[in-house]
Length: 150
View 1 (cartoon, rainbow, N blue to C red):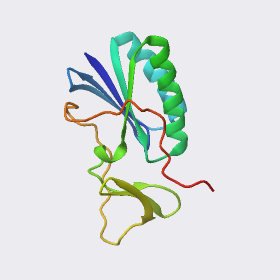
View 2 (view 1 turned 60 degrees about the horizontal axis):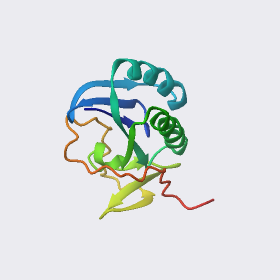
View 3 (view 1 turned 30 degrees about the vertical axis):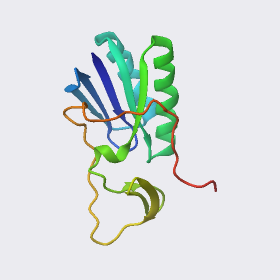
């Protein structure tokens, strides 16, 4: 079974192709999600028989999350592909994720808060896992914004 994991909440955009839960191909693309996803998925849909798409729905760039959700949800509806979501902390060793200004999203005890970083805080880059068998993907795919209304 072919599954695709899409991480759009930071640059570069990461897309992994998984066959039987194991990474077989990965893409690292610099640019805007709205520019990159259509051309990439045009090729992926021709090359692979995709059965599931998983995307990171929180936290990070709100625009990238919204664009990814609308684009990927549309693909899944029109092609009858299963659609799941997961939060981004699974793919950067649970390190802080850029929010706004000098603030970051920080996950502690399964709660996400927005705060300034401590001086000795280490930020890890996002990485595609070599396997996705251990993850519990969420069937609720709506974007989660984690910030109060302005």
